[in-house]
Length: 75
Image 1 (spheres, rainbow, N blue to C red):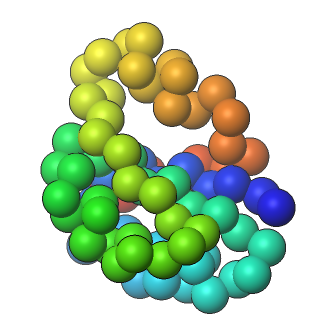
Image 2 (cartoon, one colour):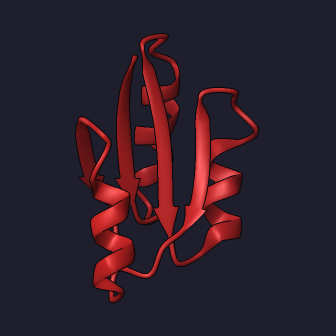
């Protein structure tokens, strides 16, 4: 299973997350400063996960982007 990291919860993030979660071979992690919005965009999907992330924190950002195969940014 491939993991896609979505950074940010801007207007385009919602449709992108919905599309990605419809693909059975994709796991989606949504990382945002707005953790509640990230959770809402995942909608409790079993292949989705939300995390709070401040992209101004270089250590946290490095850790977040270390594992996924693909990263998308929707600020």
